[in-house]
Structure formats: C-alpha cells, structure tokens
Image: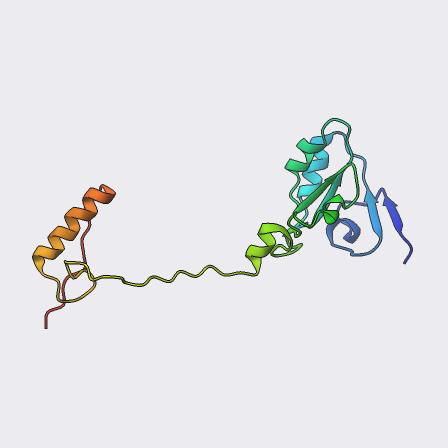
Length: 155
C-alpha cells in the first residue's frame, strides 16, 4: 500500500480507533490544543506520538498518553539508543533500550546469609518469653510501634 493521508475521517472509524501499522496518517481539525490532546488520549493505544509546535511542544508532549513523543521531528526518539522504547495501554508492554529496557530483562533477587546467631533466638521455636519481650522492646525503639511476635510453639 502506498503511504496514504486520510482527512475528515469520523472519530469512530477503524483508521482512528485502531493501530493500522500501515503507512497511513489521519488528519483531524480541532478547535484548540486541549481538544487535540483529549482526542489523542482517548485511544487505548499509545506507542508513539509527534507534536509539531513552535512554542508549546514540550507542554503538549508531557500531556500525551504515549510511550514516546517526538517534538518537531518524526521518530527522533528512535535515533537515541539510551532512551527507553515502548508504548502504553494496548500499544506495548515493557521497554527496550536504556536503563528501563535493561530492567525489563532482569529480575531482582535478594539473598541473605546469617553470619552469626543473635543472642535471643528470634527465628527459632526455642525463644523464651524474656527474649520475646526484649525483641518487642528493640523493635518498638527502632520502628516506633509495638510489635507482637507469633506465639511460641510448645513441645
């Protein structure tokens, strides 16, 4: 299909409400910037957007619900590999590129090793009532609220 510009398309048509992934562009006249932003943000999609403006580009870009926005250019964000690439809503889940892209392909993992045994046996069933009281007092001092430990299991 040749690149196609569609003007005067009804707002409920598939060319406006769906991702076409084709070389199409819909153009709609709007009375002001607020209406342009409102219409753009009504879509459930939000991969990328472009704003052309001499004075209000950054403000409009911030208001658009899209994963990437170029100002006064087409796809300029694609030329900057450190920027995260990805959409919002139904237009993509996750990110690639930059620190956000790296986080998408990693998983945080915590590993703790007990280096010594604490004097009150906090993590065992052999702790005494005195140890429980000491732990509760220390926790209250540290966190500012009383703590109740689960009851000890009787053997």
